[in-house]
Amino acid sequence: MRTRDINKEQLVKQKAIETIVKYGLEGFTINKLAKACGISVGTPYVYYKDKDDLIVKIVMEEGARMEEAMLLDFNPEASLEDGLRIQWRNRFKYMIENPLLGQFFDQINSSTYQDQFLKMFNGEEGNLMSLFKKDLTTFIQNVVKRGEMDEMPFEVYWSVAYSPLYSLLRFHHRGKSVGGKPFQITEEILWAAFNRVVKALKN
Image (cartoon, rainbow, N blue to C red):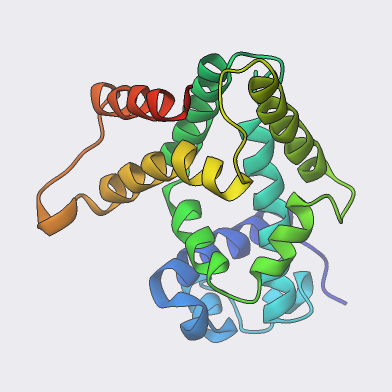
């Protein structure tokens, strides 16, 4: 039986993410992955049962890493502006440092693999994701209780609070905004958008 090589396993995961971003989930195959890694077609099966097992494990591992990064220095007792600023800073830093993962999760979110990610976020796997949801829910409840923000459906809050950030990041990673105009995000643009978001959410 072939032994596990940690470095090769990491290579397989990284190249799987790159290949999925390049070809999409529908175009992703173990053959393409092996070619991208410069390994035999049988090597990925040393680490994963099949293609689905590989994708699900990447979703679980990278999802946990992403949510852990988003909790850094986040205090659910913080004010609306302070708490949201930490969230923006953490999300921005993570996506700038891991541009392919943003595109990878865009693919996942429009696929059946999204269920795995949602199970984690909702705490069904009993891991860090439940802590993330708990802290975010507590944060929202606190700012509503203090009268900083009106109560609203979570989906409305999320759309107002984070969609502008992710739109700017997508423009940045593409290098183009609406209409093909060249675009690169700056601190000035980032925090100008943030200020408008806070204004929109505040009472």
